[in-house]
Length: 167
Image (cartoon, rainbow, N blue to C red):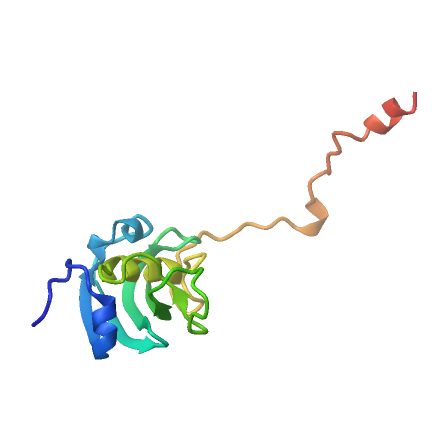
């Protein structure tokens, strides 16, 4: 029986049964991600494959979405596909002998908020500087360059300080 997308998941129970959960979440529902976007349209596809590893509930979380960002060159919209795949373990970080290569997710594994995890992954997948690729049309203004022989005069505001310190 499918559960509501807003209802917390039981990661421990899903891991025991080896379940896979797939959900679609609207981008507009991710408040922290929405603040970083030009348009909050479309949806994020989330897939979590649960398993038990040495008694710990684990999941391979895959998140995919297409988002619209602001190009930092021309300030126009630029579409980017975000993809993330993360191995997670539901246990406090200080727990000894966690499965290697897994990121520890603290909190109650019986009340997993899959939407919040998906939003975190999308935020971490955002490019540091959004810009059009070299093959895309970017409307950035042309930068005017001065010829080398017209270089501005260099100012040295503390040049006279040396003379004052001699006395």
